[in-house]
Image (cartoon, rainbow, N blue to C red; front, top):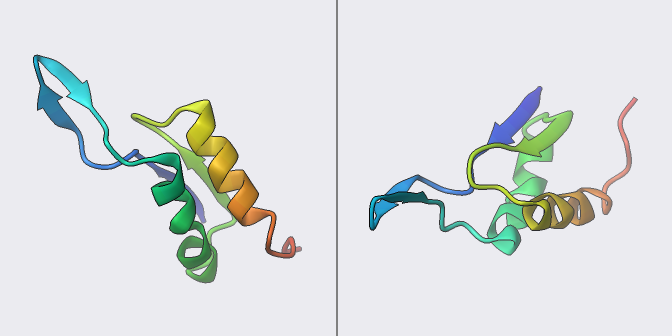
Length: 66
């Protein structure tokens, strides 16, 4: 299973789309995503390199699956 989530729900602020979920908040979801069977975890709208780094660090705590 491939998970590619947004950095939270989009909000319109001053005419711009904003995603408020922090890298730490996204990383906190990694254990549940892996437990649910995710094989690949990435990011979509609103995610930044910092979000990906935080999620990767959280995922490294788990053994790879074959």
